[in-house]
Length: 215
Image (tube, rainbow, N blue to C red):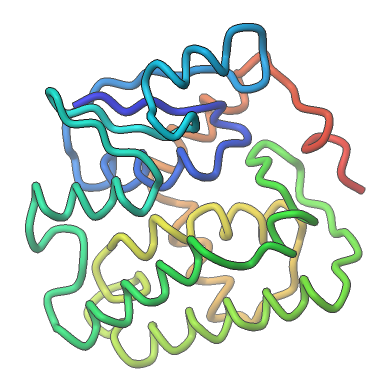
């Protein structure tokens, strides 16, 4: 399998399947296409029908969009991506789809920049509402289904991968969260796969002003 991704500093969509595959220990080739540079769009379109990263290439099968890739991995490796319990699995998929489709205010005000030194910004009511909903979703997942391990549904799952960029945003923009939520964030950020991604992001030579200059 080959995963085509964008800049590790900024590409939240790429981070999700990459992190999942690394945590699960799945072998794959990585192709990084720097975003918003000469020739970038053409290279991405050649790999991804949607014209965006990430895209997963598995033989003659091409899968694009983060959540679709995660579901494809779940098809390839049953019982490794989603919780086994049916209620937990339904909750995890619903929470993940909510992330895929929503939280536009948070995405806009706090673009992913995993190498940003933590610094708070004024959030505004719409972003605060997004934060509150995410905190509530994580808290419910942990309280109802998380007893078997340190992640949202116990073991690391597709839902943790889907929300990993939010963990980065909350940390990078010093968003105030309750202590149990912060503890969950610390567990995600302590993953060796997280550290591998961040080290690569820190070493990237490309910079996007829209993400680097947020105040």
